[in-house]
Image (cartoon, rainbow, N blue to C red; front, side):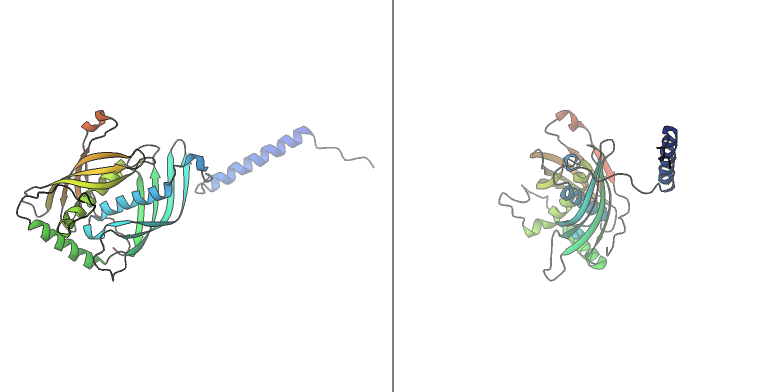
Length: 281
């Protein structure tokens, strides 16, 4: 009995080509299956999950357009991130929130959100899709918003405000509605300016001017100080806000970029679309 001959080189090449074609055909039949593996940690900014959660909340607060519905981050439960050097960084995560200004301790303070955040390389204004549950009831939120609206509308004398909070970090209860409106308008600015490496926090409100208007809404000019974490810079921003309960929030702003004064000449304007339908909202 003669020993079996090894396969000819031509036969091996044919089998290899057939296998390659089969794999390509399978990929075409399932285009929705992502072909990206999780990014290596070296390509991800430190604290990217917390950054994405806070950015999603800036967007959520702005789109909600309600001082009574403001939320802040309580903690990140889970998340995954991918980096594409040509496209940017995508983060999918689940996180818990708490009410920014709890009025009644007996109420449930915690909520839960899931979000997808996409940072386009180092460009600002990340794309966000966020859904939240465990929020304040819609009727109660509307009542509180309208009460705040009446309180601010009844202010007769010009506001003489040095800073909120004061130098000891205290916010006078009578000034809380003004601070909450400033936080609401600043949420839009912080979302617009955030990148995967730069993120902001409202540090202080330094001036307020209430503008007279024939419309029913509240018209304010604010000057705020935003704290940028990675550079530790304090950035002054002037914000013009128009708000009426239940209506889309309108914001104009201009920020002084300390590290590059030539960029400080621009102005951004935004008018929010109808508030996104959010769970339990």
